[in-house]
Amino acid sequence: MRNENSLSQTIETLLEHNRTFVAERAYERYRTDKYPDKKLCIVTCMDTRLVELLPAALGLKNGDAKIIKVAGAEVSHPFGSVMRSLLIAVCELGVEDIMIVAHSSCGAQHMDGSSMVKAMEDLGVEEDRIKLAQHCGVDFDRWLAGFGDAEKAVRESVSMVREHPVMPPNVRVTGWIMDSETGEITPVHC
Image (tube, one colour):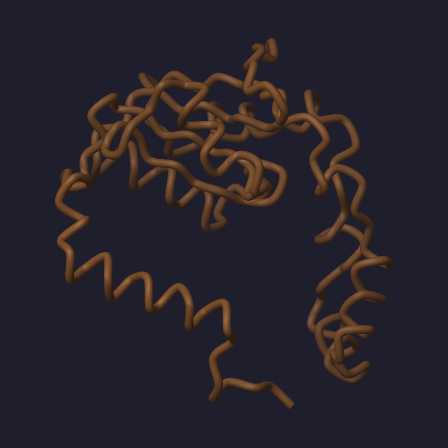
């Protein structure tokens, strides 16, 4: 059974901070509009090491860029939510450059479907729910698979975005790997 009525101590602490943040008007220093000043969108990994490291290493401040975070920095489906977000960024918000930025030592790199299904079961997902998903066509081994080679995954994501049938042709799409310790960024030749 899902516990949706009570908040964890972590969430309670965040909410208390938020009340103080708003009351003290701390938000004023973050004011900007929805248009990225640098006409840039970055697809990067949701890894916790990159939360502050990536913007700091690239010299970005609030308002400079759209940042889309997804496991492995992968654009894995041509009509999925990441591609939709990229098209909105380009067509509605003026983005001209897209950077696909993966990183070293990514946890999504070596995932596999069977281990994820086992983790789901260990965390209380009932077997009939897993079987229902499989019956509906979900291939956990494919859907939850890691990508193995980070450079290859970046090249595939760059290619998907560049070659997308409705992506405007003037958009520059580049691929990168960031060192998750130092923040050094190196190009992936696509």
